[in-house]
Length: 122
Image 1 (cartoon, one colour):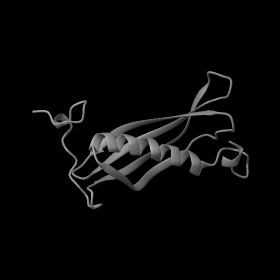
Image 2 (tube, one colour):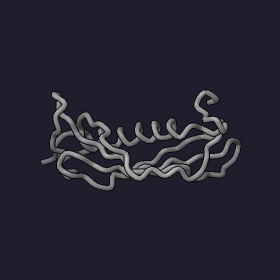
Image 3 (tube, helix red, strand yellow):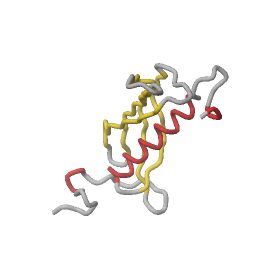
Image 4 (cartoon, one colour):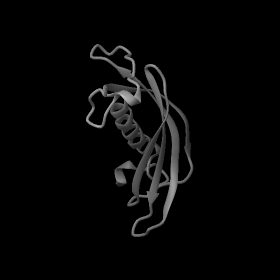
């Protein structure tokens, strides 16, 4: 939207990063099965501008899972308005920590112990 543009008239990079953080947070929370928070953003590259009217799609990949943290690789792609043309505009790595109800780091369960319904397998 026009309110999300920078001085050059392109979509503000901070808005794109916020959408990437939302997508990464969703992936992190689903994998950890608990509250997660962003603790770092590493290696963000702005590769191409987005213009008002472009459609944004954000894709995530869990690259690493540690004891309490995980690294999520994120790519943001634009689809040019009224076109099928797509272009990678931004990519980066977002680091999340899993937290318990007291906001203290908590161990992320092994993936093979988490079923599709979210209950422990066994």
